Length: 391
Image (tube, rainbow, N blue to C red):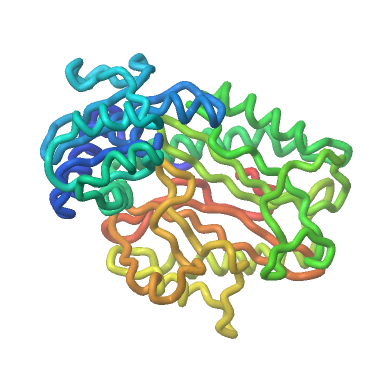
């Protein structure tokens, strides 16, 4: 397992996040930040909410409002027991039903003057805001979230440690005759027992076709991943791609691996892993402040100049309160986007190029690092092939 980043202090982490949001508000010239997206509400307030299906989640929506320069946001919620104790009583309010015209008008009357930035507003709230100057909240939340404090990095590291430890429980179960849903059940039980706050990704234990022609395949004629669990027994020699994510104190982990069911990897599968390892190591060698995403992409190219990963995947993506967030590296956003993205200390990168050799399936794994002042530090274990991908 990786070394701790710091002694975790959740109250300090929440104060630091509010400070980052205030700096971003100031830089963007925004006076009031309105957050309806639940992960953004959690980022701004530290509040949690009970799990709910999609319909109930929309009606039980928490809302956060932060005025520029304020030490605390206002939190509107029907679950006040999920709010951190340090939020002042005068900043904790009953929920407002912003999905209704009356609720939207009520929130509008509570907002201060000036430029508003808002994220995921339901239609009645958008209508109520027509008289105000409103911009996209990503100009505030993006800069605040893209670099992490030491406490945030420690949350991600601990979340990933729980994920990896659970996989050590699951890996011996991945044998011929087992059902993928049995692996999912074992994983979910393990992460709960290990102290995860929640599960954030339906566990993916997907047996991959050997070739694109076996299907299913995408409109770009590439294998599809992930798909829902298929209730078929595993067979010796199956190539299984795994993807799981759990949440700890509001922060996500991201685990990816390739398992060969019932057999040792053959020479083709070892060569696929060697290519994956080479691509990641070449990119990691360029990770430092001031490097661009384009630098990482160029370093990761094969000797013939090709980019070896599937087009709808990444060379790397960020992770934080979302399982995939900025920065994005080597995506279909293109070379100009990569050239404009400059690495900074505190950025987190999840490297997951997907190597595919048609006729022999492929390899995908994931490694997480954080950019430091002179390079990077690992938040996940280094992937090797002989450990079976369980790490």
